Length: 398
Ligand SMILES: Cc1ncc(COP(=O)(O)O)c(C=O)c1O
Image 1 (cartoon, rainbow, N blue to C red):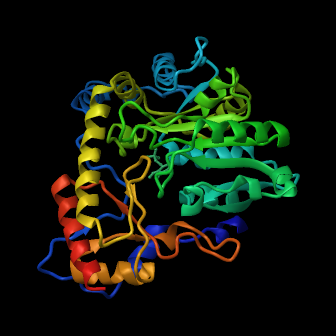
Image 2 (image 1 turned 180 degrees about the horizontal axis):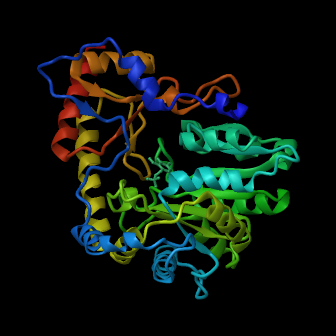
C-alpha cells in the first residue's frame, strides 16, 4: 500500500469515540451532540422536489465538466454575491461543479502538488482535517500556521520565513474558519495574493461557511472578490471552494463547486475526468435551483442568529466564549484540560463537544487547540438552549 497512508491521523470523530468509550452518561438526560458540524435545519423543499422530479436522469452518464446551466447559475451567483467585475467569471472556463468541497479539497492537492521539488502545503492550525491528509497523500509536507486569539484567529503570515514561502506550493485559507469562525478582511486577502505572486504559489480558499454570517449588510468577503478589488478577473493562482451543505442545509446532496484561475481549473478538470467524480445530473439540476434562490439562505441565517444570541446569553459569565465573525461554531476556552472537559461534560450532562486538540497539531511548541473545545450549534434552538443550560450548570461545578 501507499506508505503515505500511514501518516494519516485517525479522524477527530474516531478520537472522540475512543475518548468517550467506557463512560456512561447521565441517563436521565437526553443526549445532545454539539460535536459534528452537520447542518440540521430543514433543506428547501423546492430543491428536494427538483431532485425527485429528475431522478429519472440516472439513466445518463453525467459529464465531469457539468451542465452549462449549472456552471452559468454558479457564475451568476458568484458575480452577485462577491461583487465581481462586469466581466464576472467565465462559466465555461472558470467554474467546475464538485461533489461537496471535501472531495474537491482533497483532489485538488493531488492534482497540483509537484513532488519533483520540495513541496510544502501551508494551512491554518486548527484546520479542517482534509487539508493535512491531502498534503500527506500528495507527498507534500504540511506546515501548520497557528491561529490564536492574539491574531484574531488568523495565522501570523509575517512570521513565515523566506525559505518556507519559496517551498510553498499551496496555501490553504479557510474563511470563515472552522472551528474559529474568523473571517479574513479584504486587506489580508490582497496581501496573500501579493505573496502568491511573489513566490508563485496557489491559494486555495475554503469558503464553505461564507453564507453563515450574522450581519445581513456585511457578508464575509471572498478570495475572488479580493482579486476583483485588485482589478483582476483572471484570478491568477486563486481557487475558491463553495458548497450547498451549510448554505442550503444539504450535506447529503454532495454539491459544491470550485472557481477561479483557468490555468488551475483546466488541468484539474483533466484530473477529475480520470478520477471519475462527475456530479449526477439530478443533483446538478437540484443545485441550480438552490444557487438561484437566496430567500432560504436568509431564513437559515436568521435561525443561526437566534441560536447564537440565546446560547451566548446562557453561557455568559460561566465560560470564556465570544461571538464568532461567522460560521455555526463556538470555540470557547475551557477552565480545565479540553479532553477532561469533554469527558466530564458527557458523563454529567450527556452533551458531546469536540476537544480542540483533535482539530489542531502541535506547532512551534504549542497546540492552539489546547484548552479549547468546538461546539457546533447545528441542533434546533430548543436543543441548543438545553445544551447551553447544561453546560452552564456543569461549568459552575468546576
Ligand atoms: C472547513 C470545511 N471545509 C469543507 C467541508 C466539507 O463540506 P462539504 O464536503 O459538505 O462541502 C467542511 C465540512 O464540515 C468544513 O468544515
